[in-house]
Amino acid sequence: MKLRTIGAAVLALGALVTVPVTARAATLPACQHFYTGPIPDRPVTGGHGPGTLTGAVDVSNRLPAPGGVTGALGGDGKVTFTFARVPGAKAYRAFRNGQALQWISDWGQPTLQVTDASPCQNANYQLYAMTAEDNSPGSLGQISTAYRVDATGKLAPYALAKGTPLDYRVTAYNDVAQTALGYQAGPGFCAVDARYIPWGTRVFVPGYGHCYAADIGSWISGDIVDVWLPGGQANDWGVQRLTLTVE
Image (cartoon, rainbow, N blue to C red; front, side, top):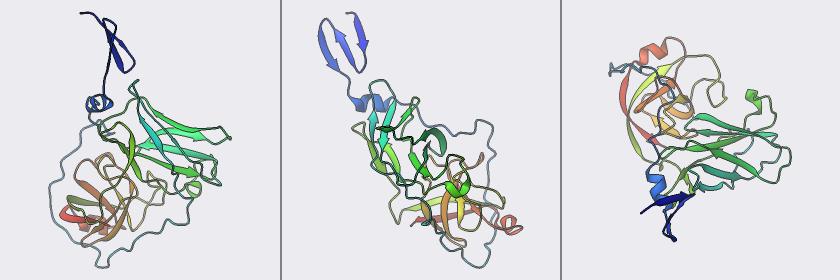
């Protein structure tokens, strides 16, 4: 029997057979780490913290995150979603697993829309608004919650539940630069594999204190979190295996 595929359906001798969205979602490829080069193993060495626990960073002075996110995995194999405007925003950026997905200028168009032509399983979609289109650090708003394609094929909010324990290796870095999310790197910020820990997640790290996920790294893959410490304190930290707690 000859079959002919049209969109999300299959025509077979005149009979229409619908292919469930969940079946399409299940066939999406696994999300890959953004860095394609070799990633060295980081065996646990032990180390020690700074002695004074780091407090939680405050990002409340930034533009609020976009909300009203509505979308789904379509029959064309793409994830498309719309979101609500943020007063004072001139543009927006969308991310998939911490990687830039789309830039959206706000010129008053009827709909603000994002399309991912190459979705992957359990991808974390996030957004922030900007007060200017120059992408300067001061213009960047707060990151939204993550959104994932759920079992029905629709986008739904996703977050690690508060109190969730995470058995991770914890390393440290001391770069004096801008994080991937646009904040100045410093105490209280950490780099994560955004496939598993969405940006904006807050975790408590024993011996370090509070960390706000706002960065990524080429070697930050899987069960590794990289906390920020100044100067030689980053070296003193070493590689520690710890149980982190989602806040």
